[in-house]
Image (cartoon, rainbow, N blue to C red):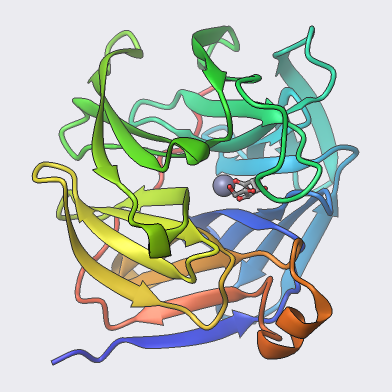
Length: 299
Ligand SMILES: O=C(O)[C@H](O)[C@@H](O)[C@H](O)[C@H](O)CO
Ligand SMILES: [Zn+2]
């Protein structure tokens, strides 16, 4: 008895929409369009979008406890002042890798901002491999590096008890887990919890639900899948009307709705005719499971 409804709530035509984050205080969804260098804020009540253009690819955005937002722009962790549209650099990574940029990022349950890097793509998923690393920005603005040799650093989230960190390096076609030490922010004991099936294509962004299950957006797979990270089983597949589904988060009233971002880059004109909503923002209701509120960056 499924009453799942999928709706394109914003026909944004993002080149590569990513990093959806719900901001409860403003009833808004934040997201980025990476190559368009835009951070966007869609108010779910007024349906209005505000956009802020920055000077390099912006790959993730997060709430900030002291006001405004943080974002990963180029290879920099930055603070955003939405009111006057200004950017302050908090830290820079990969200084020796001129072709690198950040990709997906998310704040851990105590307020550290995790984000990984990748080489810039020449086409979707075409890039120099093993150039990326995973980092986090602590509240005091110092940066920790966890590991390198990453192809496309992507989705990340934490278990409800904060003891496990989940991570996707897209070209491994795997969702991985690490033991997580919330006190120190250290990770250990990497293992795979789910390998994608062929038609699921490339794992991209992901989020945790209130029952401890992971939702993974499948790039080129036109779907989000719900995984039980404890058993390694896929529990559910929800198909969307676009192939390039990039990331997902919960939002809306009590975090009962899911928002999914998508991309247009890499589609030819025939594909775009078939999927005119590519690059839009989708809302899924009726999933019967809620999400959890995002943690703001504590610095
Ligand atoms: O947003 C991202 O994660 C990457 O920057 C994108 O380019 C695509 O999602 C990737 O190509 C699919 O693996
Ligand atoms: Zn991504």
